[in-house]
Image (cartoon, rainbow, N blue to C red; front, side, top):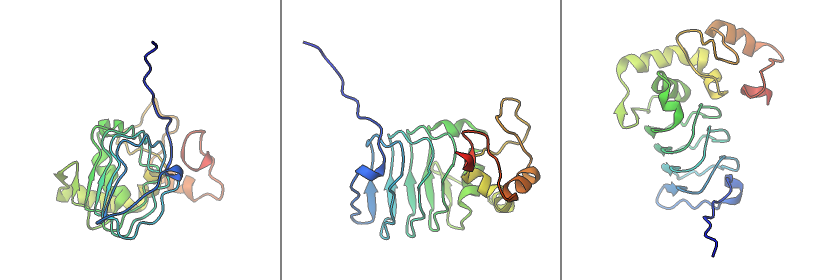
Length: 186
């Protein structure tokens, strides 16, 4: 006999039924590669998305009561599409590839830019990081949510490398031209 292991094809939320009971939604182990089809879940306070194939958070719309977001064991490489969750208090990301970036905790705080977020990977956000995130959010928040990463030094391996000021001018132009695979030009 042939022995085969069936592997589900990656999918989006377009073909997954979501039921929110007692404020919690569990979409663990669903082979999700996309959050396309994510709709408003007005009572959702906890969202469990562990062990999927998510590489970003595109299509993740604001959820008004979401307090806890679990994203462990995906393949998240950027915060593309990570809309501000107005009541988010805790987010878990480790061990996604983005967690290898030295500024990933700061990038989460900037991308969320809300007064409720207090824990990233079960570690408190310290006052210094919170103040820095608030100061940087108006300048780089949009770039992070477009899939860019925050570095403190130029990166010779980057497809495109800009200072914060250069990005502001670039992003404000009437028709910014992103390289293939970055931001709004796809």
